[in-house]
Image 1 (cartoon, rainbow, N blue to C red):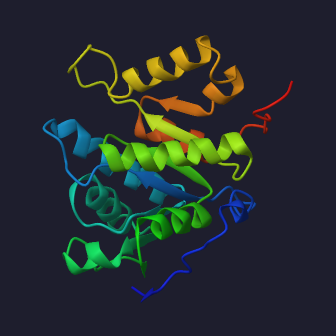
Image 2 (cartoon, rainbow, N blue to C red):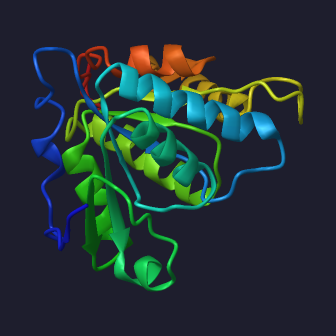
Length: 219
């Protein structure tokens, strides 16, 4: 493990084009710092980590060793893959950081953390989580919409049998569809939020090329 300070004002437009020609990617996995009440949440997190390692993809994330964050990182490392964490000094001081990562960067604040992860990543997979997970995912979706980055954002819509009986992220996709229907979002931009139903599918979709840019205004 190496650790150091990342530049706070990272340029998010620098990413998205740095993937190796072999198809290997640096995939940011956004997910909960808790494990949830359904064992399937943790199980699918482990499956994602294993699938990433098998494909030769590096995991980029917020550097924690708790909840689903720690489960994915542990699975990647145990399968022989690489994992890079970006954590704030505050969270490191709280001792929730992973001390066995391939690379670890400690940054000043949450803004620097998100910018650095965006700079490092070529794609995003979103697992179940809470406010922080949604914040990270929607920021990258917005940057895609504005043409600041070009990376797939894949929600692993795990069916748990809870709530409305659909997938965990079904309400978010309904919200996006409502925004498109109401004219607040172009259909092409609504489709930037991709959907997968298994770990293998999520990694496959994340490793594929990003959608072509559609300007938000005009047209």
